[in-house]
Image (cartoon, rainbow, N blue to C red; front, top):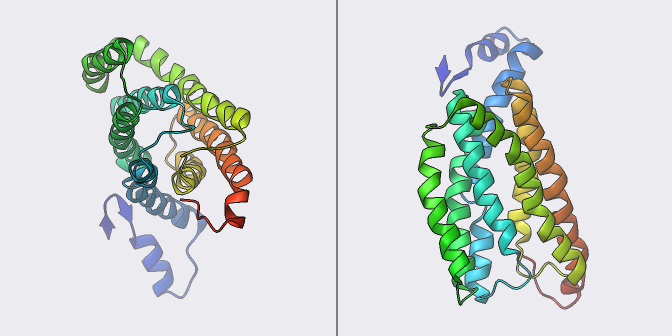
Length: 235
């Protein structure tokens, strides 16, 4: 009894015999279910942030560099997981996060007019290089080096935003829901990475995600407290 790589026969067999499933039987199934839940949630994780910007027509308090680095990081991480042949349940959210991150960055560029020459060059360079990386058409050693660097990329993608929030004592147009889902997804992905026996580097990425997303989420809660008193709702 198997569906989407999930084997229910062990669990169903134990329950039909009036027994609680063994840990070795239950944990892999929970991991798969959790993995697919993360993927399903990832299809809308950045939608609250996109809608908030569109509604307010403002990118106040957002670090453009942070969102640019995020696109680069997702591209490298997705390409690496495809190259390693990991189960889709172990990385599927990266595909949806990358698509949404590109859309979000395009919107940020639009509301950060006028766009300078440097911005156009960065966008065109990404469009030229990304297909090669995603297609795995680069030297394996370079691939490993790129993936090793993506942890630093994700870390440095969050630092400018964290520092900007701290300096302004405000999180501007950052979305609470998007930050909450980012934090929850990183936390859950630690468990699935262990169960799916993903490379240590993949697990490290999730741990960095917990640290950075947790920091930003804390800042939103701390700096938006005054909004609750005025009757405004964080989104």
